[in-house]
Image 1 (cartoon, rainbow, N blue to C red):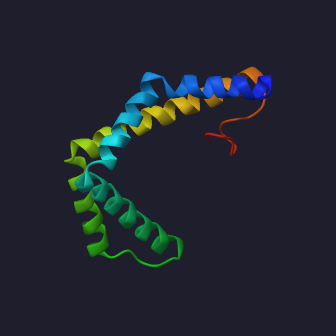
Image 2: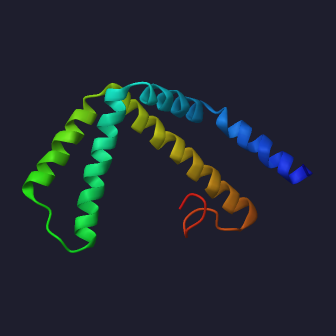
Amino acid sequence: MNNLDQKIKEFGDYILQTPEFLRFQKAAERLENDKDALTTIQNVQERIQTIVTLQQNGLPVSDEQRQELNMAQAKMRANEICMEYLRSQNIAVALARKICNQLTQETGIPFAGGGGCCG
């Protein structure tokens, strides 16, 4: 492993030990170990994907489909494991964006924004 590869690995290891990423990792583990919470999030994601696909194809979204999504989202919001996962994911993504923005400032290479690592 050359020096650059070693520094990148060290940087990655450092990031994974930040409170933000440790919190996300813990929340992801809790989610994986709770079948109801995992199913709840998957249900919301599937319903969103169905609606997005319909809209992208110019097809109507039925009131029933909207209501099913609203009910699935309400169930998700009522599940603390789901909500902690989503909160911690947002915090980890915000940190990743901050890192990309700082790399862009330091190097002049657009890591964030126009399709870079965290755009």
